[in-house]
Length: 195
Image (tube, rainbow, N blue to C red; front, side):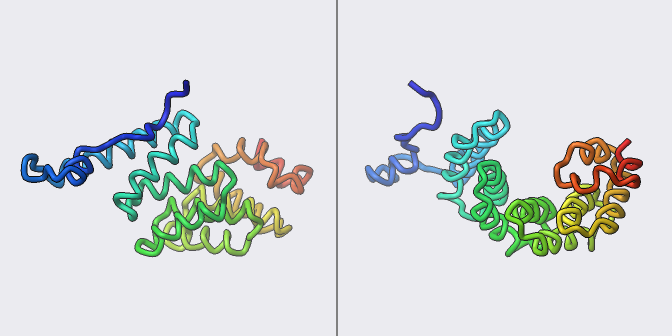
C-alpha cells in the first residue's frame, strides 16, 4: 500500500456544511487559512523530497480553495516544469504575473519554460523584464546567456555570461557543464570564463 495524498479526507468545515452542523460548531476564518497553509506546506515538503505528483496533489487542493494562492501557483508551476509540462507551468506563472508583472521568480521560471520549449525570443523578453529592474540579477543574466548561445548570438552570450560570473562566480562551473554552451566549448573566451 502506498502512503501519500489522502483521497477521502473530510474537513470539519465540509462536514458541518454537509450535515448542517454550523449552528453547533463555530468556525473562524483562521481555521481555513491554517488548513490551506498546512496543505501547502505538505505539498512543499513533497516537492523538496522529489515527489512531484504528491506535491501537485496538495498544491491543487490549496488552489481549489484559494485559486490565487501565489506560492501554491508558483510551486505548481515548478512541479509542472520538472514533469516537462512547460505550457501548463507557463499558465501558472501567467496567473501570478497578471496581478504582479514584476514577480522575479515567476518571470525567471516562465523564461526557463519558454527556453525549454524553444521559444527563445519570449524567454529573452522575460529575462529582459527582470534585468530592466535588476541589471545585476545573476540568474537572469546566466539564463539569457544560455538562450543567446542557442540562438547563435555568441558575442552577446559571452558578454552576459561574463556579467553573471562577475556577480556570482558559481555560474562559471555551471556554464562549464551546461549543454546550452556546447557550441562555445572551444571558444577561448568561453574557456577563460569557466576556468
